Image (cartoon, rainbow, N blue to C red):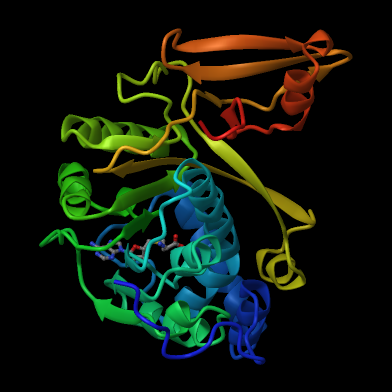
Length: 337
Ligand SMILES: C[S@@+](CC[C@H](N)C(=O)[O-])C[C@H]1O[C@@H](n2cnc3c(N)ncnc32)[C@H](O)[C@@H]1O
């Protein structure tokens, strides 16, 4: 399992994702990129025509990478960090990223787990593969630079990769609804850890909730974000389980998106499941903590009480100090059990 890396991590010409994107997108005329981003934004708002793949051309892929990749990378990173906190002994060597697009989940996973050595991407779009492979060539981690990119449509014959880590990020919603749960079940079969990430919208959460039910039904251990394997206490007609990550918009991002704000908040829903039981969060913080003078109130998902508001006062000393530091999406208490 513990193969020796064939090339070193962090070569001198490696770039972080933002700089690698800036370099890769420089090959495309800015006006064309901006036009393609506008098309993507319209499709995200009005829905995609499933008969035409969104990532059909080089410029459509480049637009996706510039416009969405920083956000999906940040969301996947945030989800994986929560998994890593609960499973400190999890040291994946192999990863399969399904519907990998331009490779966000590879970049994210290798930053969280430098133990990764052998990474495979399954992706249906040749244009996304070409862009992602080229971009990955600039990554600091050898596992990303040397990733194997395979063209595959996973809804027709759902694979069951025997990998330590299997990721499915922002893909479920692109699969036809009648195969989504089967794809998730199939991906989980031989995975050490399966992490599924979706947009943090009611529809994205509904897909995660269905995946979660199926994974728990298969007897898998839900690692994060849930504090238990039982029924999700959130009523879908009233709320949805999601988290948010703030990311700075690069100059490039602002240019192609025509945006003015210097940051954006990416909302996401996720579930991580494993055949092996890992320690679990005692409860999960579901909203920005409400911080007033001498009092922090946390909206929690708990095992015993479902959804509960938990107040921590200054009189509680160390616990209060911890409550002041935690953020939406963290485990509560923040200590690893
Ligand atoms: C929204 S993008 C997400 C890309 C990447 N995982 C990320 O998080 O940025 C969805 C990706 O799933 C791919 N995809 C959709 N349906 C697929 C299928 N049936 N088999 C393989 N890939 C698929 C698309 O081509 C696209 O690259």
